[in-house]
Image 1 (tube, rainbow over the protein chains, first blue to last red):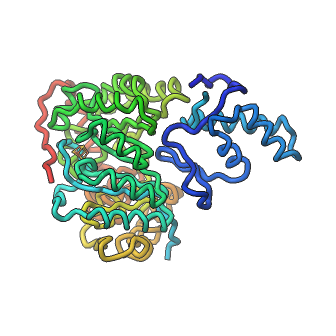
Image 2 (cartoon, rainbow over the protein chains, first blue to last red):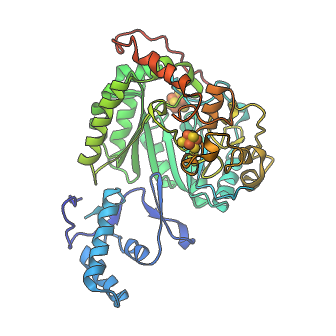
Image 3 (cartoon, rainbow over the protein chains, first blue to last red):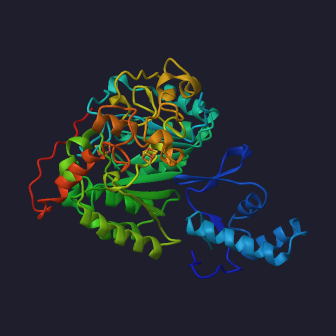
Length: 97
Length: 366
Ligand code: SF4
Ligand code: SF4
């Protein structure tokens, strides 16, 4: 695990931390379950979390979402994703490898 | 009729049996015996009914949930029902094989409760020698993939140890540490005079905790609950009566909160004779203090009533004799003087808080 308290390394691969997971078998609404918390996911937040699998790098997640949300300004998409990943990191929902 | 939301968490008190005797245990003084406990099949049905009702998380607790022989099966049943599974345990009886079995069965989150940072305090508070086992469990957890929280219950005798408790958490694989000040129900109420911290102790501890929150951001979530006797307003007990949580006792009674049984005349349904949905949506006990119609002044016209729901009904009963009164820890309550007197009693003439010999009343076993 690398320390991301300053900035996220674009080459690092986020992965859900132990005890953090999506609710069972695609049951709606999709929810990120974690210790003493549950986050409802929809749209971009779900697309980000689905890519936090330890395979995608931060950079890849950004470019894939920029394609999905091609109407939005690419820098804005990148900023939002970095902000969201940082937030989940601070809540201890993500590890970065 | 107040609108009814889904419960989000089910607190499953699997048993009242426990090898510890903590002086603040939230279990009732009349403990339910092993012979009356729900079966594996009963609990499995309760978990399925809870998931159908919209519950997301199951808190398997007790007593000591590991005192049952079927804890692994119950974890599997809750997980299979679609719930996120928390186990709240003192860490015994447990060995590495059983820990692996719990995790394989789908345990998401292991919450290990501590009575202090040292074996001496832990032994004094729990009336048992169990601290070394907890440290062993922490070691086992390091190489396993499960979320870990350390739960420290805080009171006058151990509040000065918070720095050392944080050190234990930092040396472990915990992603979360919780410092919960004792709430005064059950066994804690009878030991209150010895448990309630002083104002100075509380202020010192808050400085340490706020620093730790900043320092450990992104490493460990540091969460704490201050004693409500020192607060201006009460906490939203259980997130509001019948709004977010329900608790099932070892023998199957469904309660809106841990202490609800102290309220006289409140009938509780049993999950053996009634579906969880019926209990949640229509039973008298859950309807009784739902919404705002039951409130008295000053809550009835207070702006905060949608935030704290008038505080804790059990505390209102225990301190004022009226379960529908404003929680007397609220500074707007006409009965706040009662709480002030208790707080004053602790803060005056309490020069040597840690050298006195305490006559604890220990929790019995079920
Ligand atoms: S005696 Fe201690 S460990 Fe056992 S149930 Fe009560 S508080 Fe928990
Ligand atoms: S008066 Fe009632 S609603 Fe207002 S803050 Fe106090 S307890 Fe809460």
